Image (cartoon, rainbow, N blue to C red; front, side, top):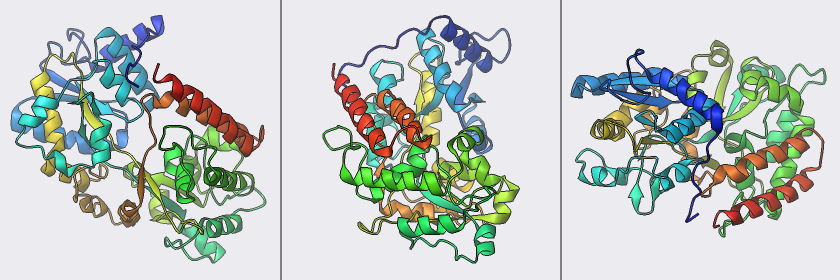
Length: 429
């Protein structure tokens, strides 16, 4: 969208949230705000506590090297964006923080992020040509650069070895078709409801059902930026998913209330697909370490394709930080080959820098993480437009209806097609 609308005020709620963010970033009552303020310390905000320890070590190295102090804040995903928007409205943001493809254009187009273009051009430490083009372009707007790539993520299938052994079924090895996957999921589903073959919520888009869509030749967004939910192959994939929902998954309420990851970790579900960002947390779960492992996603019998969506976060800074040079120094530090390698070695997550994620594979011997790298030979960048969430969230809400047997999957696809097309058309206004 050429002309993005400015953020609207969320009234008293956002004022309260901004106050919360200030408190979260303050060292003491005398500190001026959640950013660097007068404290001489860079505040850094992320939403994944499983990455906290590794990133803290990298930040400690930065402080030892530069003398610049930092403070790492971990905020839950939902609160992260509410607090960041509140900070943007009040001019009171963390100095350095993660940016996501869902929100990038909104923040870049409204002058909320620090323009890094000249700083990157002058840097002797960054090698921007070593980062994926899709991710770099995601954080560019109107000829300017607003973030340095942090990571890349892919999707793989997690399975319970114990359940497979008990059923006498060989472990998945990446050779299955989705039809074979379904047949095996049926065999692993018990009639008494104590065990299910698979689990997936409407909100498991990137990490589950969108991969099925693309492997079956469908698409979420067409090349002309219209909805792909009227594509016959997309409908085919969603009908396959509907069959899984009805026959090999727990009921929608159970999955929504408990969460598919929790169901998998508690031995209720034999298989889930998940992103590489989950590995750091999964390594800390004793049940998963003892019973589970990883395989590549199945392929479609017709296309022969096993497809993984991928995405990548970016390190950005507030346009209002009182320490812009220091903020860029930290972003630059995160983006160097040395620190990208260390991020992988520490098992924080896969690195965006080309060729160093082999170190991430080797950070643990409790799971076979190779499928996450193998799938890089057939990846699709996470679907997005200039205002992704304006159609993404309604899409997820509409899909809750077939999950709850309130409408057919075909009707849901038709409704999503109209919703998406209407919403995306408004982006140009």
